[in-house]
Image (tube, rainbow, N blue to C red; front, side, top):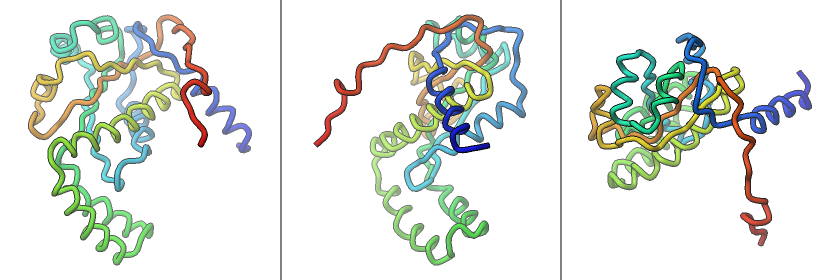
Length: 212
């Protein structure tokens, strides 16, 4: 594939993606393909590559009914979608640092000395963070992975709808997660669009950007 073709493919994704509220309920996404979409989404950057994001894929009728109690204004998206992906942040994301950087050493991406230096500096920094500081870091990283998930899903032929209108106090516990550790960021419905989405209207770049 030539570079120009890759650019055209990317342009098609970013210009074609729409927020969709109604899906074909007969279309189900296989676990294999959903895993591939998530794998592509997690190529997004994160602070020190610590990847604080965690996902719960809500696809069964029982799980969707549980979700609707927490997100009552999103019933159409929830019940017609193939699944709803709940994006969480793990406050203990620094616990995986040794595993992540160890794999980088194993793959030859960095020397052992660099890993040791990073772990000696990065992990203590995050350990000193307050819960609020960790939450703020996770929200940035969670936004990056969520946007990449939307684009990956569209490239696979699926529509999505990112939603923040749900009871964040009840989300983790409702799906068996430790609410003191896992912070809900976003829920994203995904499926085959049943109707065309409205073309987006965006502010002109000159209105929102400054050159200094």
